[in-house]
Image (cartoon, rainbow, N blue to C red; front, side):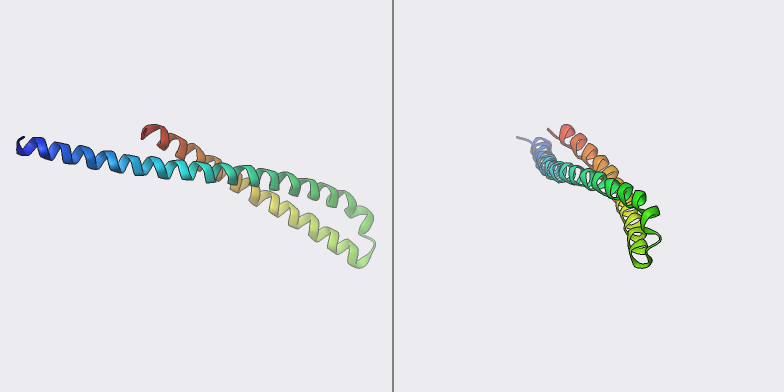
Length: 107
């Protein structure tokens, strides 16, 4: 075996090891991103439902001094939680797509 042949084999094996590690990492990221997207979608749905109920109850509870403020705070807070959860869901779906693509490229 010549020098260039051995060098080619070493480069090939190193590239294969790197590809294998990338594939393993992509699979791990895919699993986690998929779970995060699933949970954040559920959180966004629940926060949206809470926001709708609190917003609907706001006109009836606005006359009561402390209760009206609490209901208004719940409505605003749940709307914020819904927005954050929706953003996390979108980012997690994008990461999941990237991980699946990296996993396919490194098979």
